[in-house]
Length: 230
Length: 259
Image (cartoon, chains in turn green, yellow):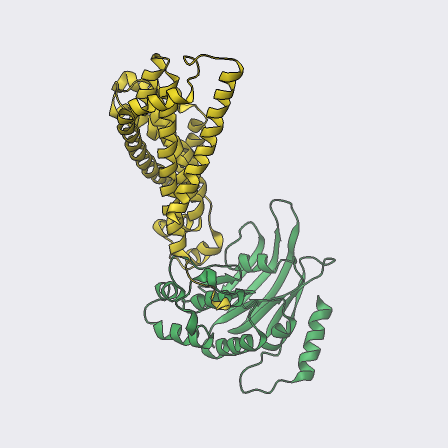
């Protein structure tokens, strides 16, 4: 499982702003990977290029053993004509009903299945949205701030659960949460600052898993490296 | 709630009607106009007593054509709006055609319809539908052609999107707008029907107004206008109530984080 970008360049067609400039990197293997950087450096554009949501870029994108790519983002909504339970069941492929039940429990959403999406808090909305992607068939799932507004404790539980439950899938997390990215991801693509717009470098994260003791010193070093690279 | 809405609508109409009538009466007394030009209150009331039995069935005849015309235009507007929502050449063609045709005063085509179809029900219905149809179509096209990306993205990414689902999402997301437009189009349909009855018809309140016009009987016209105002207020109030009920039915639950 490999994601390779070679000299990827992209500029907004309306104003000509260069977002990505000859960006090259490789991400290998299943698990959590991340794209990190300040706002406006092209994280979401990169995600949309990878998920074929944007055309008109130059450069090469090579995917090995990755057939289905899904892109989820935190502003997504579910239709409001039915309750969440019904909407989730309707989009769950047959045979994955038990996975859906499990996800609902882990994501602490059992009591909300009778509610309409518009009645949920932002964190609840993001959790519900992520569940419907996780029950789909995918090789690479891009999570663009998909756990925004979820409290730290629950976010940690969810991330560890996903790592355990989907060990053969690749995840690309786009987040502004430095600690989360440094702790849970194994490769972090740090997109450059305004001066080196469109460039980036790959750093190693801690790839923290369940039953492993977190090395605080390593985490601090990793976060410093990321901050320096930004 | 329903009664309060009807009362409010009728009260609004009565205020407007009262102000209009008072202005005319004021003009009458300032300029010392005769009852022939502007009838006084007692003459209006006397005329109302004489013609009300004929005018009530006439206004209901107009209302029935209005409702039927509006239903036809809603069905047509949704059919064409759904077909024209795509960014394909057919969708673009439908949208451009609709925008161009609506810029033309449809009521000017009424004589052609009367020449071809003659006086009567069908002509009234057709003109009512046509006048109501184009503003409705533009609103439906606007709603149907605007993607709701935050909802549609998932269904497109997972290959679940069908045209029925797309229409359902867009209609649901714009329910409030659509119900307001449909409610507002009732006035257009009523105006279309009355215009058709003015030009050439053998029934309806517009036909009664035309007859009163030939007799230069302003009192009869005041009575007809009063009945039209009351009936359109009730009809619009009913449509608004149905719209509110649909919207409330789809969002009745309390926010879970507020429970």
